Length: 160
Image 1 (tube, one colour):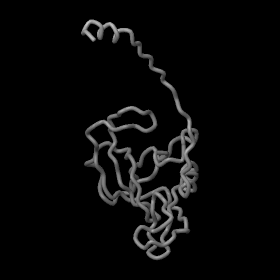
Image 2 (cartoon, rainbow, N blue to C red; image 1 turned 60 degrees about the horizontal axis):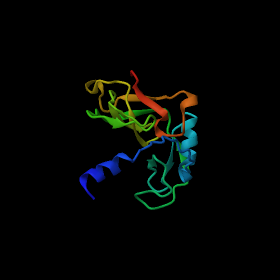
Image 3 (cartoon, rainbow, N blue to C red; image 1 turned 90 degrees about the horizontal axis):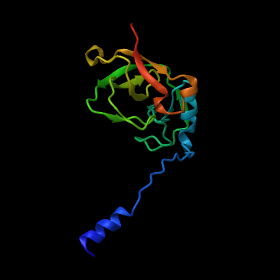
Image 4 (cartoon, helix red, strand yellow; image 1 turned 30 degrees about the vertical axis):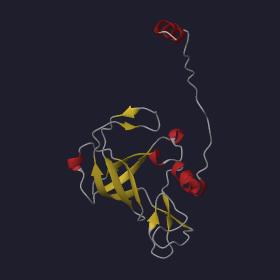
């Protein structure tokens, strides 16, 4: 096939894009109790019967003692800052599907009930965040909650 015939054949092809939304339901299984609690502005965790360690996300088996965790413990709405860091590159926003530059630092929080959880912090200046400071959860409006970890919109420093 000559170059001219190839060019002519390529120009015959027309490409169409069909944007579409695919709706699906996903079972979270053992974590459904946790998801339902998040929708109600509650943070719960599973507790190991051997060491008493609480885990988020909930696990059927303690990762340290390999025993079944059947007890669910309310973790409260507050916790202490373990660490904080700021991201200096765009990240994928799972709610919008877009790459976003985040102004707020990511924080690790040890909750009143003992479990640990990550999230965004309201305070944008990392230098003002001190290990051990008290933070409280700020929730999305009820109509926006989906039973996901990011139903906690951010963690707000609480003056002591």
